[in-house]
Image (cartoon, rainbow, N blue to C red; front, side, top):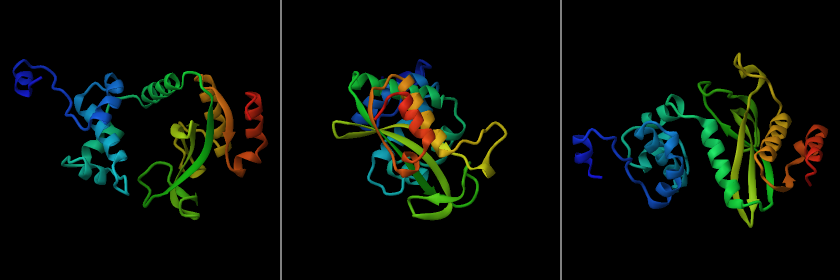
Length: 217
């Protein structure tokens, strides 16, 4: 609809278009965002992540998608009214629908990102695989799905070192986080035929018991 007509009729404006594939994909999540600006930021982040820039920081994404400031992207992630859990569940449901019961391989992996300062939650001096040593950074336990040579993200859980916990947090080891991920995927209805992980998990009796609980290879 014409923007001037929308203003005259006091109608909510349409979100600015980006590129067709991003607009088409993000449209399935549009109802999760009350404000059109939040929905636009959602699309801009997807566009930036898919771009060829090496550093996917908010300032760099703002530049590549041609918006004036990274503040709007930061506000979208930190303060705006939308549910991470609803978004995650919508994405997992769509993946499950596309798979249509086909079996997948689940890869459990850790990602460590170096971070300066202490403003980001759960940053601590810990081993970071990306740099191969102990450094200041944040670590997450991730699950990826593999089907027909296509790899896609499933679930990510941030590892929270003991010295960084908030009052509402409960300390969980990486093994516990990985075990929770397996349970969530099974309870969400994914058909898993094989779980791949490195020796941290493969040598853990706790994680092996979780795999055995669901009769997974």
